[in-house]
Image (cartoon, rainbow, N blue to C red):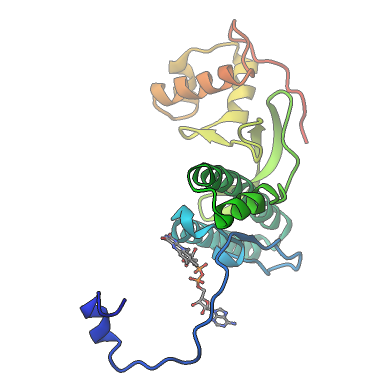
Length: 231
Ligand SMILES: Cc1cc2nc3c(=O)[nH]c(=O)nc-3n(C[C@H](O)[C@H](O)[C@H](O)COP(=O)(O)OP(=O)(O)OC[C@H]3O[C@@H](n4cnc5c(N)ncnc54)[C@H](O)[C@@H]3O)c2cc1C
């Protein structure tokens, strides 16, 4: 391999092996977040994706930003529960989504080349436990959950749906739960008034209203559906 890459060979000219070559498995792995306040895992130490995903560095960098926000929140507010819950749920969701798509890719490949390696890999991913919270079912509802708010993780009212089991706080910068409150009180879906109230563009206001409508929180007449659960 070094002969095929002369520049690398030159850079490693003085290098000597530190030991015998060692083969290691490179598969997806999940580490459950620790319960100890102030202790958290980020990057591969938390969720290592399958190397074939090509997303490992991207996810490691994303989780680093979340870890920084968790540390800020703990140091400034002294509360560990919201950041810990946010990290735990985010980690579980990432694991669930990524292992499901890895299983699909391995399955496709195993159909083309049903060798031992691919078939065993399909079996391994199919057996991956769907870690984390049980799937969200039922109607969209408003709950208090931890969200990433700039540099901090804090509890906010969010809309929880099957597609967004950790909850969605804002659409185009418009706070969804506050929008439900506003629509319920003002009995209007006039985008100009909504945009004024939320200091947003009319397009953003229209988008947020449309989001509520699609997710069943807004009746066809524009009235808001009753809030089913508030935690
Ligand atoms: C074979 C393979 C191919 C891959 N291909 C891709 C790809 O094409 N694209 C992609 O995006 N990702 C790929 N990845 C995944 C990617 O490399 C990782 O997701 C990413 O490097 C994770 O970054 P990290 O900072 O969390 O961990 P790491 O990059 O593993 O960094 C952790 C560092 O901590 C050090 N360390 C460990 N323990 C200690 C200790 N006790 N004290 C001090 N230091 C310590 C380690 O030496 C290491 O330098 C691949 C991974 C593998 C295994």
